[in-house]
Length: 315
Image 1 (cartoon, rainbow, N blue to C red):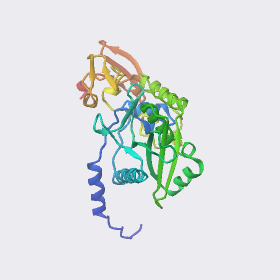
Image 2: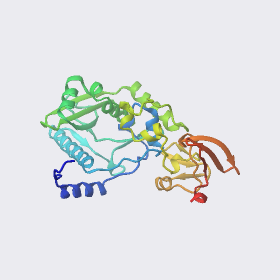
Image 3: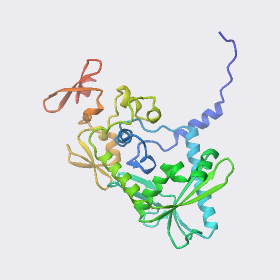
Image 4: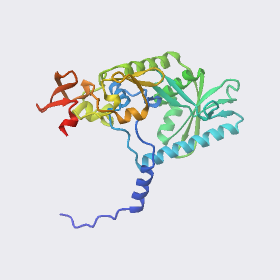
């Protein structure tokens, strides 16, 4: 048994991390973020879209990385303006960041900017996408191009171009270790963009979880997935309107409750109601009976009986 005295905790650093995490933006995305559209697993996208998986949790380091990315974005857009380009960051109609919605409004993203007067093509309006990254990644982009080395960034730009009706994008990435900058013009690929939109439409429109990418919970695809325990270990999904069999996504980025015949707001869906009934595939067991037309009986993995709809009585 060691008698070494442990290093003292850096209480101020811990307090700083807690403070920034406490005020961070958290919760569930209203739709499928365009940055997540290239995820290798259809089921993972579905679980997150349906708010079955745990929401992203904030941490001090994560929030600082987010702030660093935003700062680099501001610097890069300002540097682009110094070349004489006209850069638009705000949608004049809304007074907010330029938003793009595809797949009936359920595939969503926000554009860093649009620019006119790019040196290589001054008469063409470009989507502008700004990224900052470690030196190794930056060198990979410089050597291989964004489509090969950062395909998720390339797809984001494709979807932005489709949503805004543009044919070119300017990718600007900064090396966080040296502050060198690389720029690359990207051409619109309609086949790739429309194919990705069709994939997301299929996923969000499915009433049941799609096939998973792997049966191995330790695989690269599954290891860091927020839905890992639901998908592989029989953990329970969260209770909200999106995990309820009475709800369905509809066009214009909306959700509808079939039982109560109403359109659901974001707050409505987070809150749920007493008529919640799990989508059967989200219950870690087999459906064996229905009682009184309302109560759904399941046989769980451990052999116990569980009645969906009788939670209040059980409590």
